[in-house]
Amino acid sequence: MRRSEICIAALAALIAGTAAAAAQQGLPKPCAALRQVCVQAGFVPQGARAGEGLIVDCIRPLMQNIPQPQRATKPLPAVDPALVESCRAQNPNFGMGNAAQQRMQGQPSAMQPPPSMQAPPPQLPPQAAPAEPPPAAPPTPR
Image (cartoon, rainbow, N blue to C red; front, side):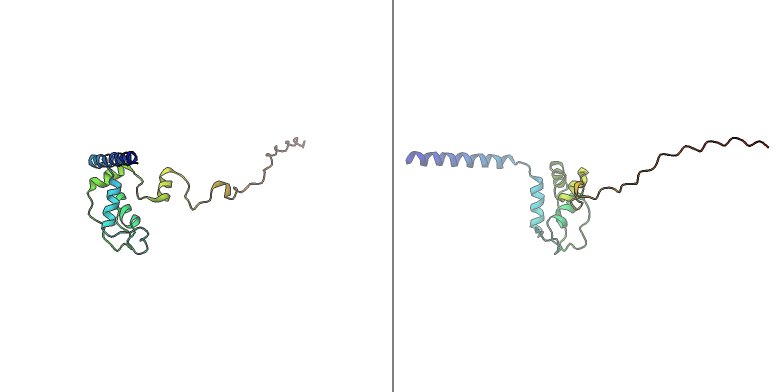
């Protein structure tokens, strides 16, 4: 039993050491930092109707460098432009949502039914081959 306790303690120390080393390396997570800035400013997930939506009222305006929607009730937080640029470099679609990602990739919108469910294009009636002009009548003598 003592041996299993030592193994567990050694494993825990190894895991803790690995996590500390990763934290010291400062692995870049600029998009997570951008999200955290918005959360600290009071924006919340699913808060778009109240004008405090995390994505639509904070992250998307920062990522696209556009003004907030008029319904936004909280001002955008001050963010280092280098943080936004590094997030764009790491994940250009961060905060864009599925519809924006599909438009960027040239895929059909989620609101449009797949081609197999769309109505077929209208069929035009077959046209008859152009008729040959009638033979010219011989000239009548006078």
